[in-house]
Image (tube, rainbow, N blue to C red):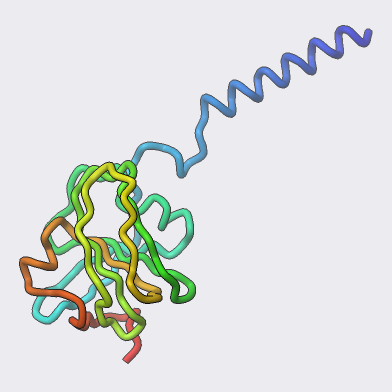
Length: 155
């Protein structure tokens, strides 16, 4: 009798192990996420920004996207200001990133190459980070000190 039970236990463990390997968690799937969006303004430029508020949403970000419309991006919202660092693992698009203070002022920007692990960090503690298509900020003359407007930024 104990040997039969041991076989069932082994079979159950093997099945669980196979299932764990075969079915990755939802966040590990190689698909782009779609999040609610809001409108931000950069002077005369209107931005449609998907908003990543949760840790899981921020971890996935713009990974696995093959394209992004002009003037679209993703706004990452953190609970409290801190040095925010981003990388481009599994991100297929070259992107620009802006690190933004609570009042909407851009602290610093950077350009990020796809599929790299190079860190891109804020130079000051921030709660907001905006990713846009490659060259978006430079093409519009937007740099550190420029102020964005929209719902998340305090007056």
